[in-house]
Length: 303
Picture 1 (cartoon, one colour):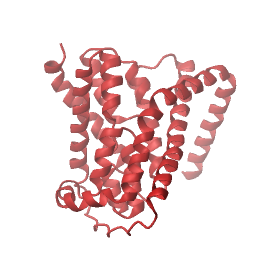
Picture 2 (cartoon, rainbow, N blue to C red):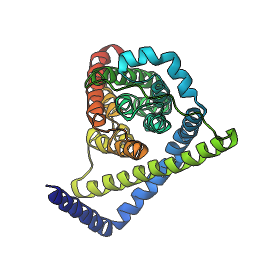
Picture 3 (cartoon, rainbow, N blue to C red):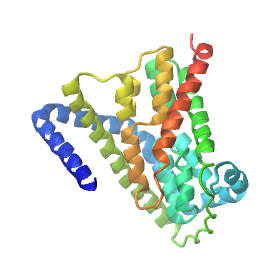
Picture 4 (cartoon, rainbow, N blue to C red):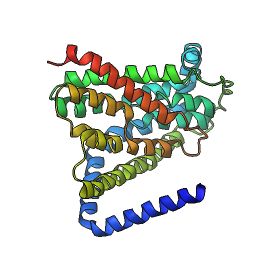
């Protein structure tokens, strides 16, 4: 089975290489579109939060929060209180800030890898800037609709965490992290340079999945908003039309995040030891809960 899987991946890669040669102009246009998207939206919205999250973790802010919130956070999500830093930064900064912060907490020793896996089921989310600015204002011409989508998104994320974090046997709490020995200047420099490296990985996946999407559409024709959003969130959201169906679909796509975001998440957590087995099921649950909440709320929120 493993050998067959390798051959399938090899054939897929060979097919992609042929597609890049045959549709070289389409691929080049997609790369330019992806780079433009990164320069206009992805880097300005994510880079500051990447740097700040690294600095907060290295300075021990998550450890302080963990002491205050350890009991309720462990009772609700079976995770150390330090995880609230990943949840809050993920809710404010957007994909994949929460995953990156969770991985940093595990690497620092503030959380165990098992706790990081539980945290990942609900801490990696779309930010308010995307939900309100892109989904609300651009698609629905209403910041108010974007706020409703964001509130539904947050509610579904927390509900998914409550549902999935109760499964399995509880893990022992992580030992207190070793005290930070580097100076403030070194911590600041490391935070900014680490953020730049992480930003490069995120942009690489944004560009790559835009190329995949454009190449696929040359063969099949334009994809629907749900299909495009399943692969790449921004493209899917921007293809929606205003109305109740668009509202429900937007909520589901925000909860799912897209394959591009999931690859970014895997890149952010690589080497941390965080198990990824719960992550995709959690995003599927969050998407379903988001769609259900949006469907129930749409008659009361939309004209």
